[in-house]
Length: 76
Image (cartoon, rainbow, N blue to C red; front, side, top):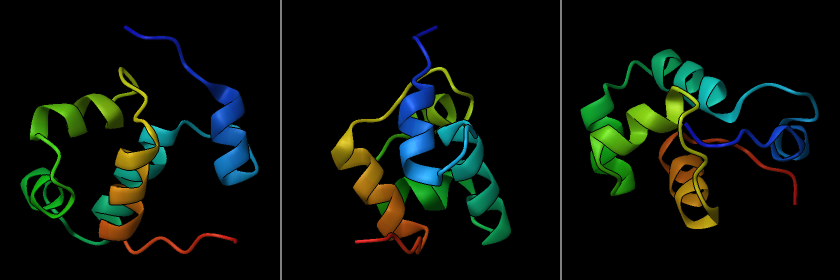
């Protein structure tokens, strides 16, 4: 299991909520399967499962792909 990065979670969400948890909640709220989300992001299902489970913290490119695929609005 990799280290968690609570500072990154706080920077992204303004509170300490695990990034993977937020990704999972958003995906489920959009009624997207892991497969559909993986296809939309170019990620492997196994990687997405690890991200959602908190076992892997994605880099900037993967975060951007997830933001785009899950229609997340970001502050500029």
